[in-house]
Amino acid sequence: MHELGITRNIVSIVEEAAKGRRVKRVTLDVGQLAGVMPDAIAFCFVIFAKGTTLEAAQLEICRIAGRAHCRDCGSSFATATLYQACTCGSRAIDRLAGEELKIREMELEEVT
Amino acid sequence: MCGTCGCGSPSQTRITNLQTGKDLAMARESLHNHDHDHHHDQNHNHDHDHGHDHHHGHHHHDEAPSAVVTLEAQILAKNDALAARNRGWFAGREILALNLVSSPGSGKTSLLERTIRDLRDTVSISVIEGDQATAHDGERIRAAGAPAIQVNTGADGHSKQLSVRVFRFLGRPRLKKIALARTLMAVMLSQQTPVRSVGVVFQM
Image (cartoon, rainbow over all chains, first blue to last red; front, side, top):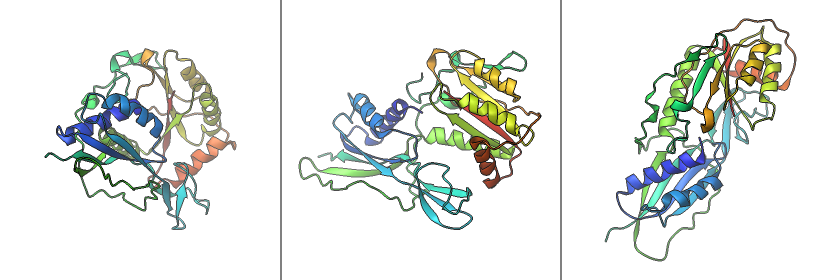
């Protein structure tokens, strides 16, 4: 999926959840192996946020490292790609982390 | 291109069964329903050691008081649900489905042609080939010996979320050691569910 569509989703989800309140910050979790370029999201964010309650929001993107567990030798290890083999040589791995693509939290202006 | 989810609009997409030359009708899916049913579920199961590399020095000493709201909203919730359904569909039919992605002209079709020739006797391989206009690559795949269908997306570019049928194929083969074939076999053998055939999807 393109970052364009993804970013539009982000703005839409946050705007609806914010219920009219001004959004000061949006924090995303983007895994290193999510197949998404954070720079492109940041670029699109500015465009899609215009005219919405996210207009002045700061976009914070947290990268999450890839991690997998080997079913054969039982070890957990960092992964740089989706189908990386274990150091023991096995490809029987369970992918634990690194593919996240979510909005963790948003910071809203308090209604006074 | 649909501005919401990035998929190609169905009206511009054609699917051709290269074996018969006939166009296949695209299944009507409720994919284009874009109201986001984002779920604020707090009990998700994939929270492991994250290895975050962000700096959280964010105490805004300035302006108006603010409230931090935890969302944990999956951005691609709908897409993820469809993907999970597809995976179940493949697993139920014991099909290993692979998506071959790289920039145009990098050699995907060539690599796949060779893999098909080498592995034809070992496993059934079927291919869904995507391109903007021509069936050229699809024809190469057929010439190599795997059934293929061609998806032409028109000017919209690549289209995802297609409902297609994967065909069986029986052919002649000689197992040779090339990188893709080796990796393919290794991945097949490591699957938790049995694999009887392989489906390969090309993207531009």
